[in-house]
Image (cartoon, rainbow, N blue to C red; front, side):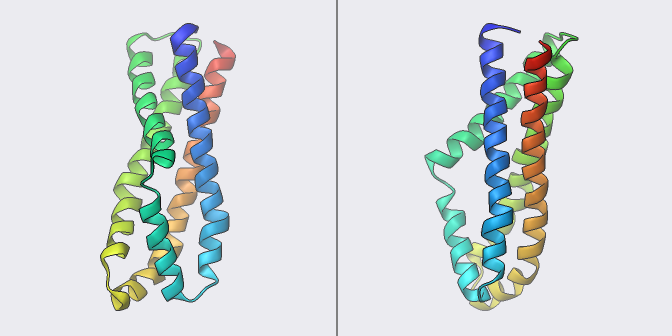
Length: 158
């Protein structure tokens, strides 16, 4: 592996690792902090955080890593190299499923439901939102970190 493929794999590994760290920090710091304050305050803060996530700083890493993972997946399947392609395919697929798909299919719909709920509905939603959202955030954090590790392994064996 050399040139552009090496650079793309390295950038994708770093992006996945960064996202793993973001999700980890969110689970062990932010969500634990929100669990310790009254629900109405926690809901308002979470709604604000969810809206704030739609910034270029966050979305460029999240979506950039998603697009790079998709490109690496296709590239590795089309130009299979026994030394490293398995790691690239596994890492890319893990990020796409464990981070992007889980975010789009699980977290975003729950965030939108919480955002649209009136105060009484939000109180009810929050009871399951907090533990369930956090549990699945652990999954996407681990998936992202593991994807980064698999991509680094691809670089190591290339």
